[in-house]
Image (tube, rainbow, N blue to C red; front, side, top):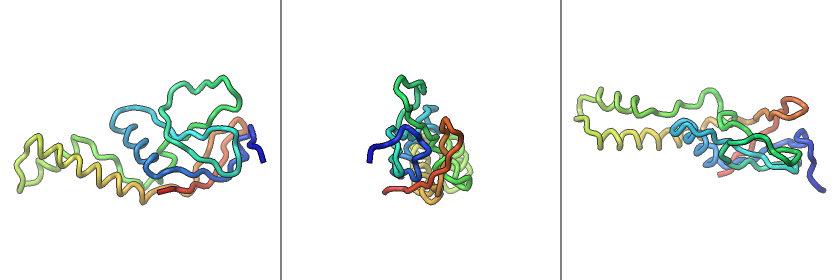
Length: 143
């Protein structure tokens, strides 16, 4: 059965856990605007892949759908650790002398812990913006 030009044909989106975490981190760390993109033709089950957001005006119809990475995690997801926060944590630790190297190590550990923890907060569904209006679909996380 061929796909449809109608994005409301989508019932479920499969997304790789690593793509979501990478997109979330890139948005917070570098100010980039990565998205998870669903490319037509549309069918009941689609795959969303990480994509660098840019021009959203596509010449071809139907256009791909861009989903913000934050849509794939619940509100209870942990906040991304900032260098300032990890510096404060290190400076507040009386058992350790602050050095730039220790700060880099502490921040890398905090980011690794965040990457692992955020995977426990994936959403069961996302809402797609379609020409027909908002359309909720279920989410299957791979990996």
